[in-house]
Length: 415
Image 1 (cartoon, rainbow, N blue to C red):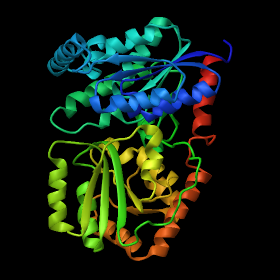
Image 2 (tube, rainbow, N blue to C red):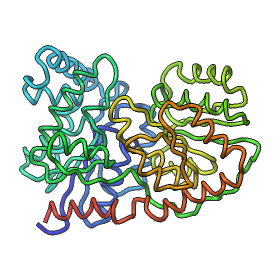
Image 3 (cartoon, rainbow, N blue to C red):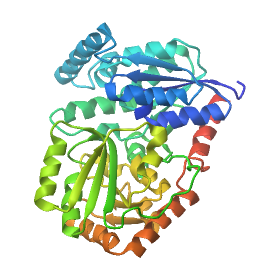
């Protein structure tokens, strides 16, 4: 096969909510391949961000629409099939369930993703996100081409709540099946890779959640020295992400602060967090911002003093992952307050003065770390500059161990 291969990149998320597959498509296209992306549409707020993403790129996109407002019968058909498949998994157990049903119980639009992947010729299929894993393997096997999967998270250890046992069992079944025959496997942290190696005997290549170096360096000047500006973002704003600890810690730190949260809030959560701030952090103002397209995330983080990467120890995946938060902050020249989890420990050490590592749940330690930056402007300035220096040195997408590693793996797989 020539170097110019036809590659399908697949995600079960929106283009704008899966930056790893977006970066992969961009990288493989720039590396000379003919790239097509299969993605979905199901969350109304992400549609505008998707349009922004597509306007900046030339590779084609096949979209599986199952939004209630626009997909017609697809929303209802996939919902009924998904619930029936989940009920079968609960009744029979994930291991006894025929794999086609397990795949539909794990990914609501599994069949539609496979159909979309099969709608155009491909020499290689690469994909990630929970609901796309089985579809990557299924469509590649039907077409008779090699495939690879991106296990960004430990999918069999990322669920909490009443249905965690069923979901984790299904994830284990899917992981085992898709790893069988994959040309290679990527993941997002060394800690996650070690667990996959222990469970399945694979050696995932670690491609971190880094982003491209911005065209302009950060401006480290503080627009308002009287207010300590703290930033956090995610697709969903809700409990279990360390935000309650952050609010209480800012209160104990004692200074005037502004905590900006960017993302879609769960119903009632912002009101509850604001009430917590009134009680424990009366000098802290909570600001909510709507999500922005992935190409704008670094710019959105500029101008803040500290970014929060407060991953917790439950569920298991949270303690193993290194999300895109810290990597976004440092590219914007923002210091990082991060929990000392197995996943984040090495990055925190590498960032040096640019980060403060605190034990998960240790509010006093978080308050002390934030307070030092709050009270000592010179220390804060040094931290922000150190964060940016680390980003330029190692933690950016163009680094040979990030984009270069993925492109090399794909070249070998399609050669």
